[in-house]
Length: 461
Image (cartoon, rainbow, N blue to C red; front, side, top):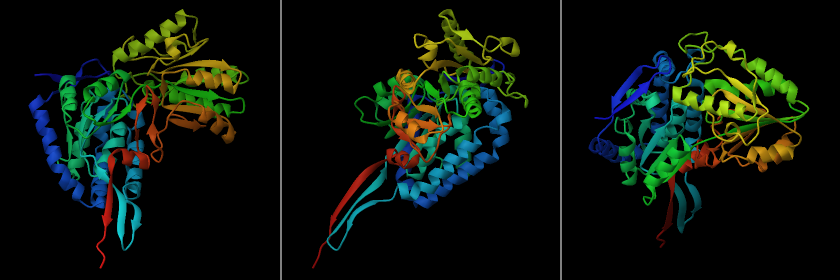
């Protein structure tokens, strides 16, 4: 029997483990979901929406358990109170637009014809969720998928093994039928076999580029619809007219919050030469104020990375950049809790360039490189010099300039004077190796349904 295990970054010990389902048991779970889907879809939309919102409310009631479990599983300090703000915001927003997003597009309703396009649920939706924001990333798909009339099977990352259990527990206790929303534990082989067999009607995956490729290979020939959010190396660009203090505060938070383990975290920053020195100085001071330590300590502001192997990648990228001429500016003596394992001090590198993996490959840790630029054209070239494209953060007082530059950035979302935020009213999407598809917004609902046309000729006397 294969065991799925969570090693806590807090102490390096096993925190939770569950047996992976056999292929036969997994097929039975899918069959139950498929059998339950039609009845679920026949329920009035408002009933489905309200049951999802009740599930969200029930999870909020479990905050004391959820927040401490997150600290143990992936290291986020309890000081920040879990993910409830974003979790609730996204759920409430998609609930508010569900009726409009799923309403028929009426072409004609006359005495002779009824012609319209309706939104039909795909059927069984498979959500493969990541560990870095395990509740928020899951709810991006779970909430609208259920509201749209799909049934959902959730497979969570081993690092956040208990999150799926908590989500399903909350929703079922709130009245969502057990077969409509299921949490399962699978190994990679069984997952691939299920996908290759066409078991699901839609698959949403958030994770690594290689993970996305594996899913595409498994799904090849099945024509299963896929939503993939993969790697990122999101840039910030600080122009000469930027609010310097606001840029430092937001970009440094975007680079280091959650130990830098954010899908749309800031991983590289380009600063106009007129502000460069001041920006670097203020950024080093900002980052140096973190308290690295045990995430269960209410005074801790920076916890360990989710796994020591993730921290190893960050250290290796930093060491490689320094060996090639980069300069590390944050004094490691300020962070005695850095143990060479999962507990990793934040870092800022200057004298970096794009020959370094640190400036091109995903780092996904509390470290960021800062480069000096002379013009918008130089900054644009550097921002686009990446295999990824999720978000870009532009800092200026000129919205027209930001829009003009934004049109030429190869990215999914353009921010001006903010960063590292997911607006549920906008489509969350990426380009290049960041993936394909989009979640949330009206477009998210459309991706979780398929168009079905009705061309009805009426009998007239």
